[in-house]
Length: 478
Figure 1 (cartoon, helix red, strand yellow):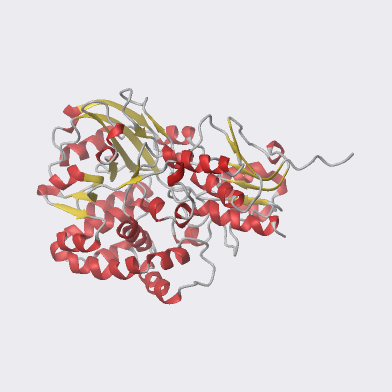
Figure 2 (cartoon, rainbow, N blue to C red):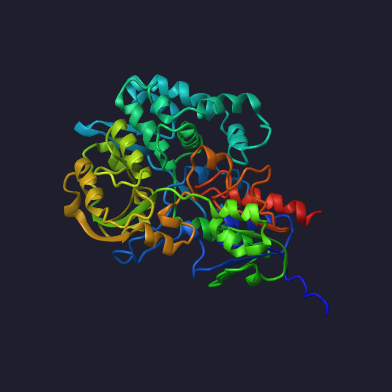
């Protein structure tokens, strides 16, 4: 009997930013691409809803603010603006309130940030200026597979040496709490103990991306990112099918290559015995890290921050001083819930007023919690918010809570509430998801992994998908 005809050149499983970036990278080369999405709505971590709290108040369910999205070479080389994507930049990129009413502030403009940081300004400038100046070169080398020869060895070498340091060491270069807390809060986006090697890398790259390209929100919600990518893919002839759950390679339509935007555990299950035993075992041993506990608030009149710059900030880090932050991140990695957790919060409505309903505004907040945390983090989160915004609770009209289990149910890649695609400790940062010159290959001919569990890791940037697609192109063009 003759073999079944090939229905498409490439199948992509998952319609998050990485899956869509993989699909677009292949479609732009003229290949036929089909995307399969398990849920009824595309987007993965870039979905939004106006039905979570007060009808009409638009909330970003997962990702909210996108410094790596604005900086992404993948996004910038595609005509996504023509398909509806528009970045909006707040006056204050990040505010980090401190006890006593003081606040550390980061602007997109590096010189303005240096001036506002006072005593810490010179150290901030010395640390960031060289990387901001060479950001595109450094990012092209560092935001990809770790085992390769850098194309920009001088710029990347300097950044790389600094990146090796624990964030606690780098923070000690700041003379006051302002600089320490601001750098620490940015670094803590990696959800890692800040005394580990390589944690400085996250703070450097995120801070530099924010100075070079901004710290924006997407107008119309984070869903606008996925919608623009999907629109462009359809323009190129690609297809997207929702409500199609893939649990085995047998579920895939016949194609020349397949790319999976799933976690390593799911990859091992889907590939089954088709995957070489050692590689399958390595994927099955992949370690997931601390989780997120997410609360979306509807707030009447906005959050009453004591520090005025926080009222103008797109992102507000809520924790207090650097030592408190270090302790909180250490505890969640030990599986213990801190009394004062680190909160990442966002006020996207400041640059996208269409998200509001009358005087009711959305407020996005999540806390770092232990992996699979089953307790109620809301009281600890709101105690932190009351600490820096007295009267916060009086303005809450409604709240929508998502526990780590809820986040995993919403997006299967968020195992135990881990939104980073796996622990980013030194071992899993270099061997992501395994030590290989081409970490996107799975050991199964024609099958590739394109999720945030591959380099360069978590975030809305599409780089994991694009890198995996370039690996797949070697098969398609052979």
